[in-house]
Image (cartoon, rainbow, N blue to C red; front, side, top):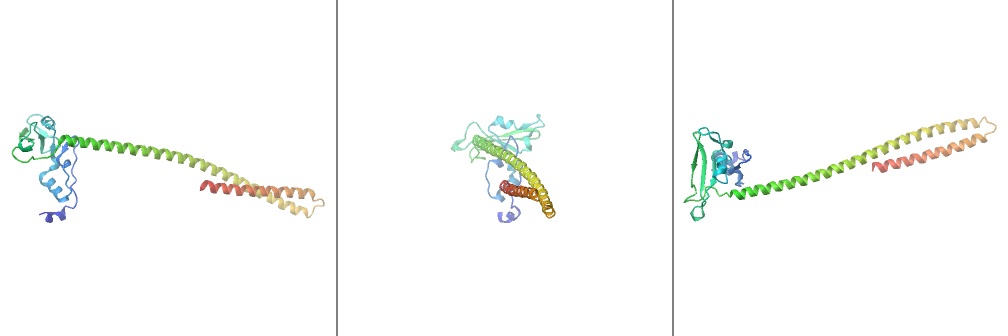
Length: 233
């Protein structure tokens, strides 16, 4: 019973996906985990293949006569007959290998419900549509990635420019601080010399010049700080 095995089947079985082959497990949509896992465990729906016609089914047979086997170690390949059964039931045949040879069970849908209700052409068209959608999604993602790359390059270029500008401002600020310190030391020397000098007019002129230069340095340092804040912001 389902309520007995359900506690042990809380995840879908991880089944293989065969390239270039349509599996029964890929054509049915089973939302119930338990039902899906039972189909895998008991019927091996992942190893049952579907083909468009007899020729396509034979293309899944590998090996020479006497050593033949189905591709991907599949159990059966089902394909629709070219003619149709009565009462709207499509005749379905099953191709498989036995004792190294090929066996074919014909008209499995005659007089009963079809064994499979899969429209191969519809499934193929659906796969093509999903492939086209995936291509469009990939193209859109690539365009978005290219746009992000351009934005990154532009931002990196701006960052490099900002970094160089900050570096230049730091060098200018260092020069201004050094010059202001020299001007202050010279002003202190003049102020000491004024006490012993008889004619201090020349000293006063130099002191006034130094005061103006010190003020110029102060204004320039304030401007540098404002420019740094603007760049960082």
